[in-house]
Image (cartoon, rainbow over all chains, first blue to last red; front, top):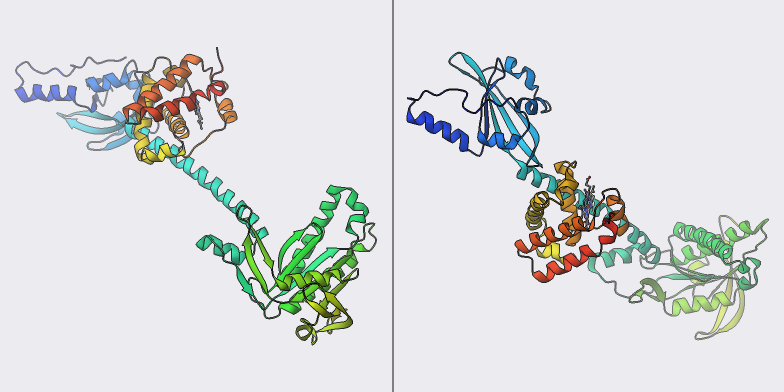
Length: 361
Length: 119
Ligand code: HEM
């Protein structure tokens, strides 16, 4: 170490008291201090604090290692009153310490000096790094949380209409609600259990998945909601939970499109999917059911009648009864069928939905 | 466990424990050498994550993650115990109840197998 001996600038023995006091203060302050001859770069004073921080490290070498300070040329370039700030990382008693440096140019008695003030800002740095680390942890957690939330939302939207979902999100519950103006569609497949594909469960699931995805797209297109699928059965509604003036027509159109979709799909396929559909207009209750497992479901006479009508459908037929006739007869082709005894509903006149009066078919 | 970090007053309070723990680790002849070549930023990062994860703060590491992180660090039983001990001392010095400290220490001990790689 080019240690200057701390008493290089000799002080006359008869120097005034305050000069000697100043010297003592320089030595004992918490601030590290060095005074360097600007021409020769020889340190004239390095106070005790700074020496302590430097330990075995050579002052000149330490200063030269400070990034961005350009210590070697400072002596020549720095003018009176100019200052530079920089940071030095040192090992103080084998631990990393952050030292903030302030170098200033001073002229005294025609000689130029560099004055280096050093502050140990380790605790400050430590806190800064700690906050950095902590902030990053929070950010990461938040990112993960957001991703998790989005995933959960997507799942929930699969099992309940958006409006019900928003209601639960906003107030925590969704109350059961009665809907009088709505129509229900019930579909299932004919001879489902005898189909050859039923022997291979994973192929079966893949096909059903495919079909129901297509149905989802159809009902969505006509302003209906898919309520649920149970096995090979599919249930959709219009007018729940959002009111729809054309609920009957929406459901009738969806039913026709589903049949048409299956007809097209069956062409040239080994597995022939043939559905029966019952449609009905009538009151239902819409509600989230299940305490642990949420499911938005509808029930009530409107639903039950649709199910009975479905059972009276032949393959690829859409069946309805007189409740829907006034709602559909102006726009749809309806074919009158026999009267049938429907459990819980008495004698009903059945109709077959054949198509629309205008448009395809 | 999740509560202790918040119970103590969140980051503001825990930062004092981290700072104290940092000093203790670097004063320890057993522990300091492990961090000799680690710069201050990363060392603080370690102490912050270590404490946050052990107090149920906003960090948690799977056992597998811990194993991978420490796989090449040659940590032995003595160093692991020293770390435990220093954290315990830090927590006690900052008013954490002895019962909670015991729980935290037990949680750390449960991870020993994933951090210690040298007999
Ligand atoms: C259950 C106890 C411990 C936990 C939860 C823990 C946690 C961590 C974490 C999260 C990191 C990665 C920091 C990052 O880069 O993101 C890490 C790194 C490290 N840990 Fe631990 N640690 C534990 C015990 C120890 C012990 C006992 C030692 C040494 C005696 C130790 C020494 C180190 C070192 C040297 C690093 C690498 C630091 C670096 O290079 O960045 N750890 N630890």
